[in-house]
Length: 483
Image 1 (tube, rainbow, N blue to C red):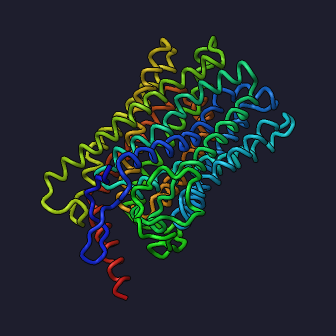
Image 2 (tube, rainbow, N blue to C red):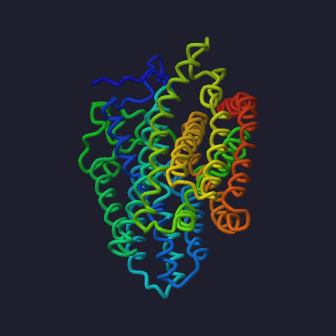
Image 3 (tube, rainbow, N blue to C red):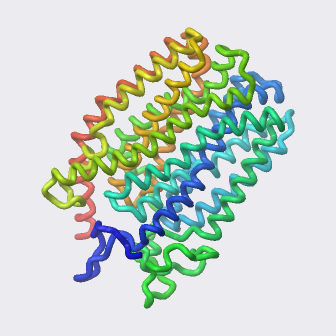
């Protein structure tokens, strides 16, 4: 099967090479592998939620103190990808992915063996767990940027996001069942086994995709970068190439410099606010549902998370298709080449965003009042489905655009995204219970929904300043080459 790429972004003399030499089959195999690995990041976080009341009893601590383990987990979810993601942009995706899974597996062993008198150890190991799990999403985004053209990127990233979105869907259900039937320690033994199996699969099959090592896939990587069973990408290797030197110089780049780009900074702000409100909703489900519907046991509380998780899965698939459709629509209207400086990539990705943000705001408010009035259980669950669909649509659109803007720093830009949104999410999670206690779920989510709505005008600012920011980056690169 021949490669099907149409993006001609690399050239060698008169010969124009495709953006990626991986076949369509190879790309989908890689996407499937990394979606499987990226599942572990939200799974390790969300599987924990239904057991929060149980852990509070076991460790003889308040729910607020157990929520602190969630807050610290989110802080390290934001910090660790800045390290791992930037390393992967420099030294390769494969090894860093495997190392993250190893850290996750070892931390889960420690969590499963934590004595109930050692609350401090629970806090510490939850941070260690986040350091291993969170970076898989950033690494997956980097791999998508390595192998996919702009025209493909929306669909591929939407499919990759299915893995992370299954975490909120199935994690709380598994956590509730395991905690209810086998005890809370079974949660961490399950994660240990899952992450170990995933690590073995990556060792066996995941190829290196970093363009500084394998180019567009035609350069065979040195043996240390090869999978044990190299069935993916063999048809792309040049028959005359030897275990190769990198095609470009690989220098460690400071990921914090990404924050200096105005368009990227505004996109990170939008994503951070929406993610924080979304995480505030999900982190408080078990406690406010337990208060509003006290007849629910741990397993049933876990099943309540299926609504938001299933919405995120549906939203992820739909968003990928919509992004690719919007891109093709804009490409037909644009006279120039799709990869030239004047192509309105911001409009192609963000045209629907203001309407989605307002829908997200309305869904959060409606959900809060359903809980406040203790309506039929079906009502808040329906609005949670809508919250899941719209929130993941917003986050995937922003993530895809940021990879479009900085494709060679896909993991680093995703790490910056994780840092900003996890920092705001951690702050909100630490405050969500006092906020809901003070205002009640109804007015509490009116406040949070209103904050989300303020992001709609920011989208138009990004669409306006984005082309100027891109032009400035191009001039800077050309100036550096001339020197």
